[in-house]
Length: 299
Image (cartoon, rainbow, N blue to C red):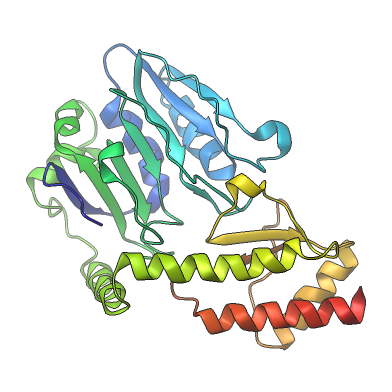
């Protein structure tokens, strides 16, 4: 990923949920706001934790007006922000940042739990990246934090030590006993990515997988993609069928055919194909074949 030398990579615990609180605890300046872009359920959780802490936070852009079907382009980045927080990929709504915002001197913070290692990006755009490992990097229980060195000095001494980035950086992620087995598995996954030809080869396969499904969705009125075309995720592809009864049948028939896990999130319904790095191209080709047959039989 070509992470520059002026960044630290930390291995922490408690998932992205802990980071929702750790980011404001560590990065808030004495004066300034914590700015957030609301693109769905996980952004809301991050905002809710900021609210609980009683800090001065602000939602500077949101796609809630269209049920989170797009990534906002107009973001009110003020000069007094401590950081700008985004969720890079929105698993429930099937949207993803195609281009990250340029925040200038305001540190850009990204929750990349569901799309880290799916593609290359410029690390210099970010002040801090965090990711629960369980989608593309390893097992649940490991949290990867990539933080620019200068931001470590923001960590105040009066926050709980276990939530202090600077303490973990000074102790090489070993302030308390780490999730050794989980980190070991992360190492094996990194070797697997290298064995595939590196991150650029993984990205090319991911785009090919996504393109196959989106081409199928766009080629018919039977299936309808829910995300705006400019904001489509290459990790989570969400779509609807003409009726909920057909969606139930589609999911049941797909499960019977060996393709499980296609039910959309309970909060939105529909169908969701999650095609993380470990999903082979052949699996996506099987899904597309099934979609075409299902439409012929039920359209």
